[in-house]
Length: 145
Ligand SMILES: [Zn+2]
Image 1 (tube, rainbow, N blue to C red):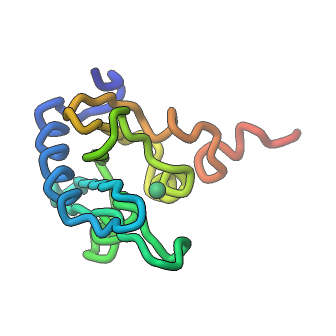
Image 2 (image 1 turned 180 degrees about the vertical axis):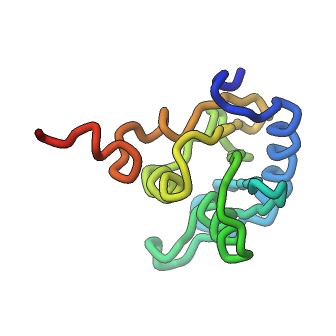
């Protein structure tokens, strides 16, 4: 169940998950064979999806979440309302990696993150739960007076 502070309906998030699944099928992951898809929805209800894209030089690869968010931002959208992430080959709910958590917090820390496994079972958390006390949103809390 979503956090009560998050104004997204479960059916909206499940639609986003279906789009993430389609994106994961486009994954370029010949090294890991681990297909990941993501879909984000903007405040204007525009949806963008992405997959992981690996490279023979491993650090040059890009995560599905960053692919999808980059498409949202580069299209002129400003705010993320939710993101769904799925691992088509994952037994576990697939959490975004640390870099993706950091990338997400740049655009908000209160939107829901749906994390799904290969059976389409999922868990929903907020970005703040994945990366508490990020420097953009909570810095003043730790200010020394
Ligand atoms: Zn990542």
